[in-house]
Image 1 (cartoon, rainbow, N blue to C red):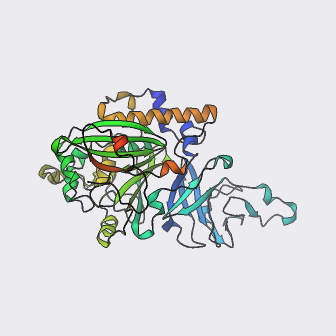
Image 2: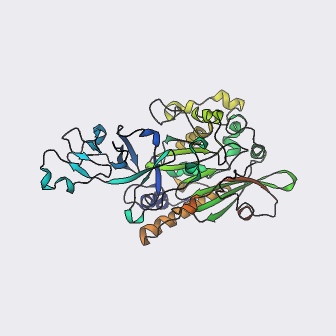
Image 3: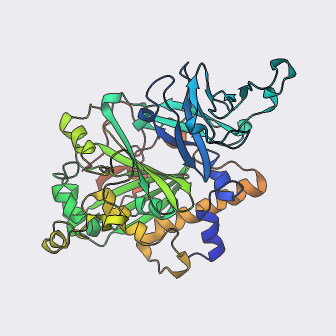
Length: 428
């Protein structure tokens, strides 16, 4: 368990907090590119790390992330008019470019230089793959642009979605590095979900509900190995990379696409759960892509016009007790994503970790928490930049492998855990 002050440290990410400063050291997913589909399109309101912001794509195609509110009287610039290289406040006509710099105040003479003195908070926003990435930290500490494999493969090989999750980012992320719950919560989906079923590895998950965990440090975070029994005295290993602060990658199943997540704080009680599927060596099939659009695998369907899941706490996640009793779903909630989210949200907005009773299968969670705390303190107290910013730390894969009992996964699967261009994922 954590002490209360430790729980506060790892969960609070607003301006001025140690964990907030940590998140601001990285490029983080901010919006899907589809949310700003064309030059001069309407702006989008977004809240990240407890800051209310406006995402803009100007008439010249430049992206920016700026303070939502006009510096004049505090009007929301979401009402603004996107015109000729900037966003104009409809109240009194003040105009800002994508960096937040005020470029025109109609009531003031241009020659007096007044507007040059007005600048909103502004952050860089860049398109890589189908995501718009934001960097919200100091300019002098800006890391290289992200090079996650799912965002770099051709568009035909990848699919990304996001959904609102109504709880703190950490309890959502901790589910992403917990492989032990798969044998329970997701057991129905292993045989029925079109993006999971048919893989031989599913048999090991279903037959052995008592995995043994081994966790080793990696340059950018951790490798979390869950070991289950296989044939002939060998072990089936599912190896999950966690890259700081909140990237997780689910071990693959058969030739299905590989998937994973980012967990990005909106504020201290809500987060964006980003979910990606990709295949390193082939295009996604029409059937696979349609299954993702239909909310299978780690994706969801939405309340129309939003990114809030159609199954949510207001409708008890469309709980089906009959399906639970039949064994179609172990929790009565349909869909892998909402099976996870429903239980994580049930913990409350921020779970009280002082009341936990952790066991050996929680070692990955324990080590991740401590590494986050160490990194946040080192950055806040000594200015030491955290792991996970280096693009080399991002060139990782998850893996599922069969190994003899005398081979340590960190050595035997070392090559399987690296991005290898033109080589498919290591899977069972």
